[in-house]
Image 1 (tube, rainbow, N blue to C red):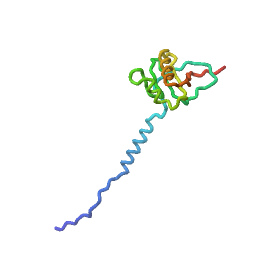
Image 2 (cartoon, one colour):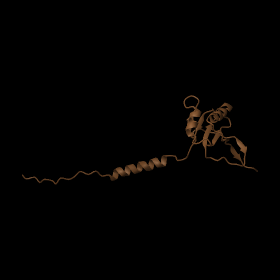
Image 3 (spheres, rainbow, N blue to C red):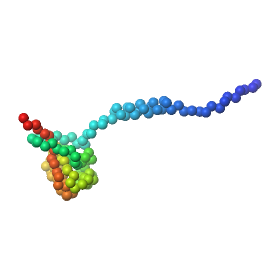
Image 4 (cartoon, rainbow, N blue to C red):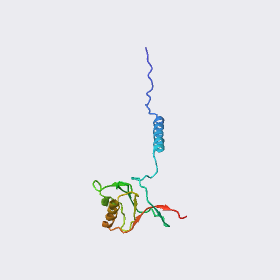
Length: 136
């Protein structure tokens, strides 16, 4: 009995299904990711009548009602990560403005602590952000 030899076929991997799965995974991740910039702390600003809007080009220091700090979205506290250390890493130049977003119920000591940290770093351009109130 004579058997015919099959020609040697090169094994091949079909990449199309793998690429389809990767693209579907990428689309899923894009659709489920939120691109909105969210603050690290929830802050309700007090209201004030003002003519000048706050320029948002500086180091943002958020102080919530519990007295917790966030500097440009980086959490800071008195124990684990000192506020002054985080503030020093975010400041690029001595004339960088510091914008303090303090909750209307934030403890007075937390606001004074933030001001003191800025003063010890030699920063003098400090602004308090408030919710604008339109003139009627």
